[in-house]
Amino acid sequence: MFVQRKLAVLSAAFGLLALAGCDGGGGGGSSSGGSAGGVVTAPSPTPTPVVFTDGDAARLAKQASFGPTPDLVARIKSLGAIAWVDEQLAASSSTYADLAAEVRRDFCANGDTVCSRAHFSRTPVAMRFYANAVAGSDQLRQRTAFALGQMVVASEAEVNSTAGIAAFNQIFLANAFGNYRDILQQVTMLGYMGDYLDMADSNKSGPSENYARELLQLFSMGPDALNMDGSLKRDGAGAAIPNYTTDDIKGVAKALTGWTYARVGGAAITDGNARDYSRPMIQVANRYDSTQKNFLGTSVSAGASQDASVAAVVDAAFNNPSTAPFVARHMIVHLVTANPSPAYVARVAAVFADNGAGTRGDMKAVVRAILLDSEARSAPTATSGKLKEPVLLMTGLARAIGFATDGYVFVTRDSALGQPVFRAPSVFNFYPDDFPLPGSTTLKSPASKLLNTSNVLRWHNFVYDWTVSGDATRSEYALDSGLPMSSLTQPLWAPWEAMGTDLDAMVARIDLTLFANTLSQAQKDKLKAAATPITNGDATIQARRRAQMMLYVAASSPMFLVDR
Image 1 (cartoon, one colour):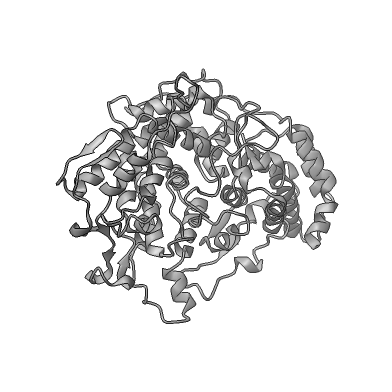
Image 2 (cartoon, rainbow, N blue to C red; image 1 turned 135 degrees about the vertical axis):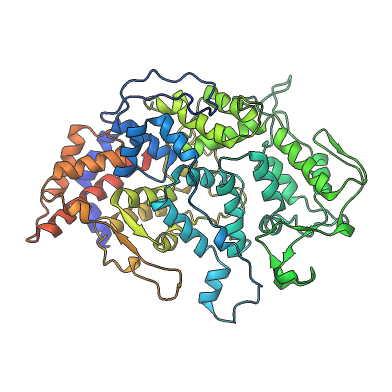
C-alpha cells in the first residue's frame, strides 16, 4: 500500500513524462558499419557517417550489452561502432566452466538446503550470469549467449542440476562467436539436454521423438520453409510448405538412439544417482538402431556408427535452407528490434549462409552483421526497437545506477518479474519471437507476452524498490548466510551524491544511460521538477534522494521500458 500511495503522489510527473515520451525527444545521429581487421562485413549498405554521438554509442550499448554505463558509452564513442564491436568480438572473460562439476544425486544429506541449492538448482549459475551481466567486460558475448539460450532451450524446471545448467550455458558462451553447427552438435550430445528432451536412454525398441522434433522446430529450421528474408515459402495454392514430415522426425529419432549419461566417478550406467548432466553422453551400442535411416533428404546407411548418425542429423538441420533466416531473425529480435524488415533478415541470413569466405554458420560474422547493419545503426523509426524483458530491465537499471553484486539479489527477484533465468517454463522459452503487439494486426512484441496486470505492477514496484527505496542498507542487498558463494550487493550511490545540487548533471547521466540522449528539454524539466521538492539537512542524503526520485520516474516510464 505504501508503494501505491507513492505512485499516486508521483502520477502527475510520471504521466507527463510518459505522454511526452510517445513522440520521443531529441536524438543522436547515425553511425556506420563496414569492415575492419579482415573481419567479413555484412553485405548491406551502411549509413553515411555523420557524427557518432554519445547517444549513438548509448543506443549501441542497449543492443549489445546488458545496459549502458557512462564508461561503456565513452569507450564506444572513442572507438566508433565498428572498432568497438570488433573489440567485443575478441573479448572473452565470463565463464560457467568452474561450476560444471557434477555430483551424485545423493551427494547432499537429507534436509541440507544449502548443499541442495549449491548443486541442484540454478542459483549458482544464475548468480554468475547476473554478476557478469552487471560488471563483466565481454558484454556482447554474454548478450549473444543469452539470446542463443532463448532459442535452444533447456530448463531447471525439468532438470535441476547446477553442473548441467552451467555446462549447457557454457556452450553458448564458448560458441557465441563460433559456429552454429558446433552449438547444435554440443547441445545434442550434452547429458543435460539428453534428460530435458529425452534423447538420453532413447532405445531402438521405442525411439523418443522429443529431441528430434524440437531440434527441427525450434533449434534450427523451424516448422515451415522460409525464404531468405524470413517470409514463408508457399506452394501453388498459397499454403505454407512444411520443412519436415512425421516420417522425418521418426528417422531422426532412430538416428539418435543408443546414448546414455556419463556417470560420476565412472559408476555403472545402471546407477541412476550417478548421472552426469555436465558431460557429453556415452554410447550404449545394443540400444542403437543400426538399420538404414532416412530423413530430410538424407540417408544413413545400415551399419553406420552412432557418431555418424548424429553427425548426419546435425548436418541436415544445420544445412537446411530455412535455418539461416530462422536463426538470423531470432538473433535480430533479441538484440535489436522485434520487427526487422525482410531486407534486414535477408542480409543477416546471407551472412549466416556464407560469411564471405565460404563458411556457413559463422556467428561472429552474423552478430557483426546484425549490429552494423544500416537498420540497426540508422535513427530509430516508429516501429523499431523492442520492449525490455525483465532480465534486461533489472540489469539495465542496475548498470545505470552503478552496482557491485554477486548476482544473488537478481535471482531472488527474477521469478516474481516473470523471467527466472535458466528456468524457462517450457522448451518454447518465456515468450515466442512472434508474439503480437497488443492492438496491432501486424507488429510483434515478444516480451509483451510477460505483461499482465500483476506483472506490470511488479515491474513498477521493483523499480521503486531499487531507486527511491534503494539505499545500500536495503535488506535484500545483505549477505545471505545460507549461501556460501554469496558476497552481497551494493548500489554505488557515491557518484550521484557527489553531484550535490547539480540536478542538470544527474539528468544528463539519466538521459545518457536510460534514454540514449533522447529526452526533450520539457522531459528533462519534468525530471528536475520531481526532484526539486526533496530536501534534507544532510547534503549527501539530499543528493541521493533526488537522484533516486529522478531514476524512479525515468526507469518506470515507457521510454525506458522500450529500447529503440
